[in-house]
Every structure is written in structure tokens, then in C-alpha cells.
Image (cartoon, rainbow, N blue to C red; front, side):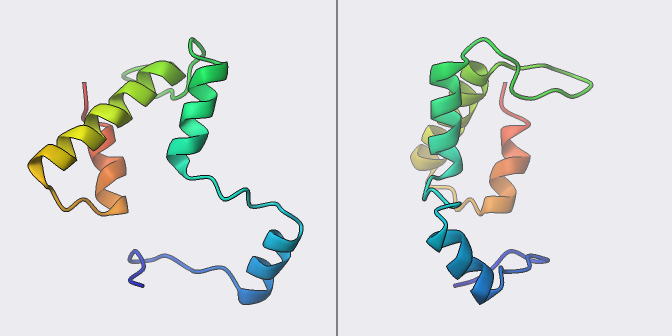
Length: 89
């Protein structure tokens, strides 16, 4: 598995501990975002000097980005997804 440049993987003993204690729920970022958007649709999810989108707006932006990359068959990598998400209007 190829890792992102600069990424430091977890230590094996930490992975085992987190799984044993169920600190890792096996959820993707998309799963967490969907749940937050369901529970808190109108609360601010992200804040910067240009905008303050709600959880439902961020979910919509993420979904449009995902659909667009599938249509274009664009080879997004995890680092490019975060950069592109900030450009979706």
C-alpha cells in the first residue's frame, strides 16, 4: 500500500490497542460526515476567512466532488481530494 508523502503510520501496538478497545469504529470520513449532516444539518461544519458552510452544505459539496470525479474518471488521491473540496462551489 502506497502512503501519502509525509504520512507516519501508526505503531503496530497502537493499532492493536485501538482496535481492541474499539476506539476505531471502522467509519470513513464520508460516514462521519453523513452522520453529522443528518444530526446537525444547519450547524457550521467548517469555518475559514471566506465561508462558514453547514454540515449539510459540506456533505453536498463532497457528494458533488465524488460524482464529478467518477464522471471524469479523474485519478484523485487523498491529498488532492481535500484540496479540491475547498474549490467546489
